[in-house]
Length: 165
Image (cartoon, rainbow, N blue to C red; front, side, top):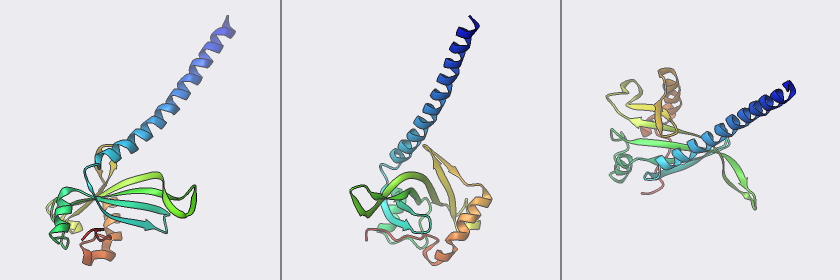
């Protein structure tokens, strides 16, 4: 009798472990899908390929940022402009080894122009998307982001140029 109880308890424990593993995988995929769906109405602003990090990036822009581009108001950017960098690991196309294509989703980060809220960083706030939730970086991480963007100070701290005129 004890052996049967131990077998049943063992099977339950294994099932719980397997379910938790499955649930974590589903949650990761759900996060990626929700991030992509959050941006479905945003426009492509730019693309980039970071050789040092071996990543491909699509930079998407909200409506305010797109309007700023069209009106050539990008230096400085209009308050309310949001640029989101969606990042994938690079990989090669399985049937065409010369082509570098997006691989595994890595992250999605954001820059928000709000001169009143972020005066110490030239009006830019930095954060990331966690599923559908926008999370702004704590002060030290935001300062780290801003420090990297110093090299493009003359472009109002934005690395990329729009892919459209």
